Length: 217
Image 1 (cartoon, rainbow, N blue to C red):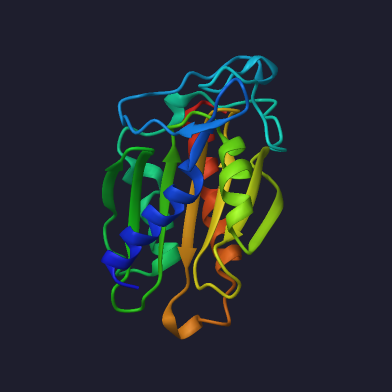
Image 2: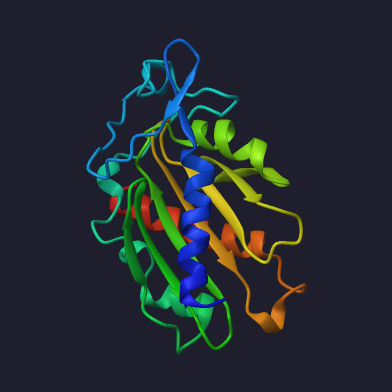
């Protein structure tokens, strides 16, 4: 996959998640596109509210009982992983991360143009609805959807737009409002051998561990 294809993939995932946001009367309205809008993390997940005034979580998403603060997210999304972790995934000649600022949150992608392997980290800040946005907007649109065992103590899901897709995304609810997700695909030589969802889950576990360390946990 080229760098351009990687950027398209991130955009596709974002569209699946952002879709629309719920209003207090239960109807749908377009999600805010202002990248400057940040979220607030409630000390009690049961008191969280969606931008439309509804309670979080919703749409069947699990509550996050012990949330991480937004301050745990690095200012530079490419600091999501250590260099050692990037090389663990892509080898000693792994490229540097490519940062991108999009309306729904910052992202960084590492893509090896020679092998085709790659992965990326995306922080879902807008709309501030956490996994609820995935359950409402993404789940109905994808062919593959799996609820995973907690990652670092946080609820997580894995999904693919269609079966046998070479890329998989794992989304982790860091709070009722905040998510981080990792998309990953193996090298062309390992298509059909290495499960992209296992790769994404592996990298998501590393990323959540890094965020917990930043939060002093």
